[in-house]
Image 1 (cartoon, rainbow, N blue to C red):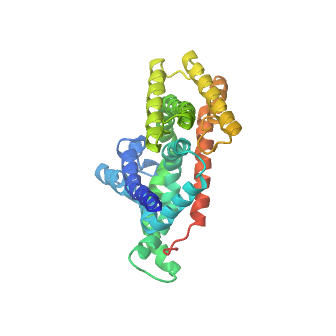
Image 2: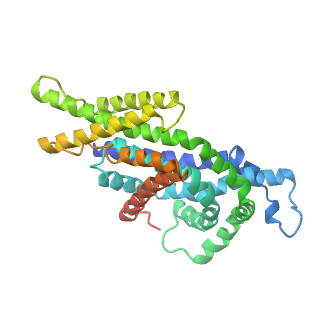
Image 3: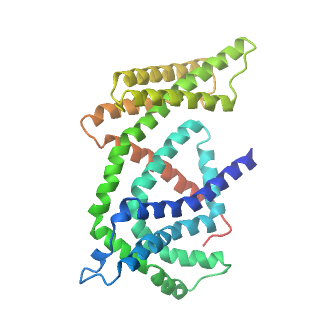
Length: 335
């Protein structure tokens, strides 16, 4: 089991090594940064670059240099990052996997919609110096590294990210508006998916409890872990279909009824587990999530940013836990 967990953590690190370059090339080629030009960088005069050279800088070199620090970091510190994931999952050991997925989903939305688009220009400049250090480690350089060896190549490597960063923040509205518009268009689906996940967790946990009770008085066996996951996937798909059928309106009566049912079943399940002395590690998954979503439905009628705020808070909690796990992990490749 430990070996399987280690393999999964290393697989996650391997995936992120490829995800970041793909992500940056996509946002520069077809995403919100496709409209970016270097004109704002040359604020003292005309842009001297030809369209071909500017295209190479923005479509080829910039995405590569933006992705380079985080990709190298993932390669050189792969062991420590995998250990951090292991520590984090261990810290969340008493939290069900579906609830973990809920918080992970929020973190991914925050990462790819807000942190990377708006933070990556600055990260790319600072990361250029880190990339030099990581490259030296990657090629086997041992011992303390003189600062001059880092600074000079770092300045060269940071030249293009600096140009793109100045151009980005000088014309941020041209990039900001498409991202915010994309988020505004997607938030009903994002929120709907998370709401359906919370309902599926609550209803699924109650059905699992019923099966556990039946197993105690008959020859019926409790659901296996795989069956538990399959049950919640089917419930998620069913509720998600209802959500789409009623037009992605989170305040629709049908969804309100589903939320109330899910909340009541989650409360009843937790009470039964407490009354019977059963393990509460396997229940109550939707007890906290569903009231939060119902409250968001109410607040969002008056404050449209409520959904974004709750996604940000849930994602932030996940990132804080990962950071704590990372600084607690150890690695032979410490810089």
